[in-house]
Amino acid sequence: MYLKANVEAGGAIVAALPDESIIDFQGKKYIFVLADEKGLNEGNQKAESDDEGQHFTMMEIQTGNSELGYTEISIPEGFDENTMIVIKGAYSILSKIKNSEEEEGH
Image (cartoon, rainbow, N blue to C red; front, side, top):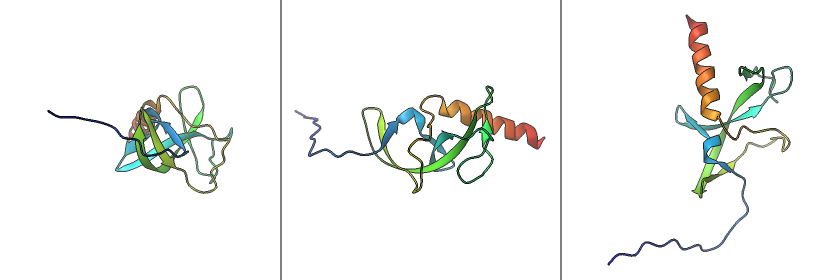
């Protein structure tokens, strides 16, 4: 006989996001955040835009434990808690950005 069990030894409050909002690109983990109206992020870097004219910036993050469809994240220092984070469609934004970069290169 075999027994498979999950034993929870305690809990902690951590920053976490749905798994679908975290993208894995070139071996690193990223999220997309909404940039300001000028299309700039907090570091004044140009952000990418989608079909609706919204501007997004890829932000590198560190990930931790994953459970029940959510992943623990470590956000860089100085991150504004009021910044909007893309929760759904992150891979769609990534593919649009990468496709538009390829078109510009030709």
